[in-house]
Length: 198
Image (tube, rainbow, N blue to C red):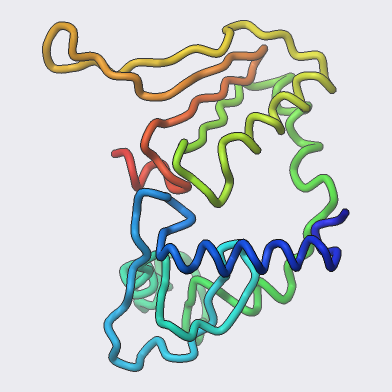
């Protein structure tokens, strides 16, 4: 069953509907969805369903407050600094990008064998991210390990954050080390780890 097959699309629609009713952010399951003020400014705005498919927002629920970044990228001074010649209005869900994006079957998978030959790669994942769940990342890494014969150099274990006093250290997540590839989970972080854990 392919991702775009009718049965798969039907299941994603059911999950989207159920998840939307929880008013939980798919980017961090501990966060509620942001609800913008009802000033009419966002009425009819195109948004992304939790599974990444575009739809028209009808209940004005948005799972991320993008006001700051939208204002930033629509500032003429920023356009000059980024060498952007002309832009009508920047928006986080660009139809120009969405309508012209082509996803290849192997995406960036082909690149990693080349990277781990030359560099040490670090992959991290927040453990409360429902958009790119940690189990999917681990499945990908395990597939990669088996396919390219990467030996395990550090078995699955916890990593710790030092406390302010003796015996106050806390688990920061889990880690797994392969040759030139290290995975680390970040406890309590969602899809945007640096945003959740500074």
